[in-house]
Structures are given as structure tokens and as C-alpha cells.
Length: 113
Image (tube, rainbow, N blue to C red; front, side, top):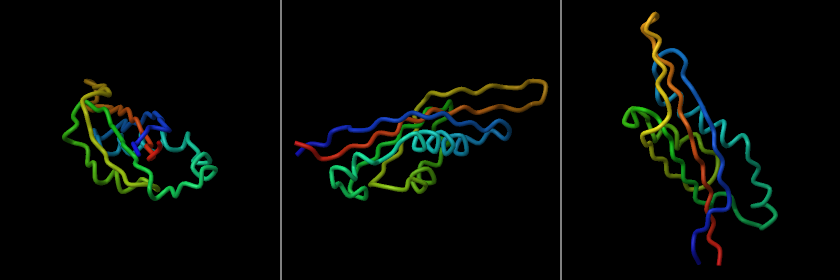
């Protein structure tokens, strides 16, 4: 059987002060997964521990995201997390601060014929 994507959720998160890319990424993932219900999996009799969860985080500085910390917050499935170039950095020159905006895509794949 092949892994097929059955769910795709998107989310956005930010760290308005502090420039923390991981914090923004965590908020983006939580935003995405709180828009989704796994009722389809229950209806199909699928154990949520066996689903594959693929998370992609878009931020301006992907190397500053602790992907393991993001993975650890996912409540179900076997998860992988990668950070890629995306999102936004919004500088505040007057305050010497930067707002970090992260985008997240959370895909769930199941083995289906």
C-alpha cells in the first residue's frame, strides 16, 4: 500500500517581540492542528498513532527553528518536521525589534490502496 495524503491543514503563528523562530513555528503548528478533527480516522478505524504527520514550517531563518521541539508537541502519529525559507520578518527600526511570522503546513498521510 502507498502513503496518501488525506489531511492538509495550514496555520500561522508569530513572535511579536523577541525574534524567536521556534516560538512562532510552534504557534503556527498549533493554529493548524486546532482547525482539524481526526473524526475521519475514527470512522475508518485507523489508529492515530500509525498515521504519518509531515510538518513544513516557513520562516525567514529556517536554521533557527528547533524542529525537535515542534515535533514533540504533536499529539498523534509518527511525525517529521522540516523548516524552509518562507514566512516574514517585520522589523521595527524604532524599537530595534523584529516580529517573526511563521507559516505551517501539516499533512497527514495514511497507507491506502
